[in-house]
Amino acid sequence: MAERGEVTLVETSLLGKAFLPGGNLAKYKRAGKEYEMFLVRAATPTAAATMLLDYKNSLVEPKFVAHFGGFFGDDAGTPTFLFSKGSWLAGVRGLNREDADTVARQLAARLDAD
Image (cartoon, rainbow, N blue to C red):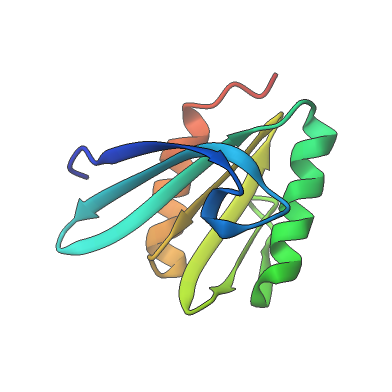
């Protein structure tokens, strides 16, 4: 089980990405691994999908994750798993694909799809 982490509200350019508005960034530690989860609320589901594609285009060798409708790739040396659900753009950074998928499923289950 993940320990409760530090959650930060970022006003603009979440994760230093000019194409992202502000959002929430949470840092966690689980089984000796440190990772981050991020969450951005877009105005519409279309806006969230656009941010997803913009972020995907910034990844190195992004791979489509069909069962999730998201992407996994390298973001400046950090493994990153991205997805959108309704008006939300969310992701997990710092875990391998399998572990990130598990954490992302838990996160997605808590999001309203609008």
